[in-house]
Image 1 (cartoon, helix red, strand yellow):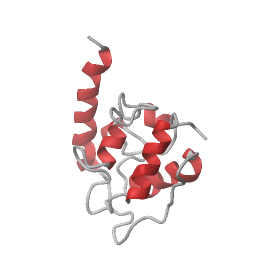
Image 2 (cartoon, one colour; image 1 turned 135 degrees about the horizontal axis):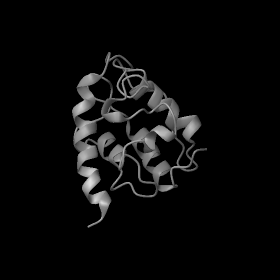
Image 3 (tube, helix red, strand yellow; image 1 turned 90 degrees about the horizontal axis):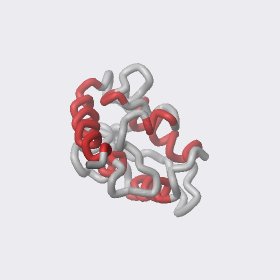
Image 4 (tube, one colour; image 1 turned 180 degrees about the horizontal axis):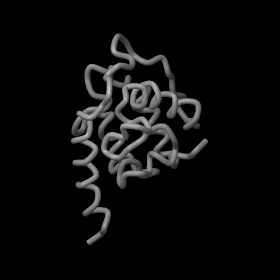
Length: 134
């Protein structure tokens, strides 16, 4: 059996259970983020990381201190710190994509504003483009 098939369910459970450890659920609660993704050539440093900082890091859930589920979204390397969170070129098996689409516990969790369709599609495009550190 593939070792990832064994690891991924545990990673999903760990990330799901750790949402309650968020320090302060602040962030953009009164409206959508203004970060806009292009249709292609999505940049980790221009679009993805700023969105993570605004929605995941600032809230105190996936910052360097809290690391809910063992996951910090403050750096590119942090995306790979928990098996299965990000699988480049595979949006179906990337837990990150599942969560922002509302499969399983939705991320970011309420009362934070959900990502808009442009942001969800932008992250999916970035993943399908290989999730480059660009």
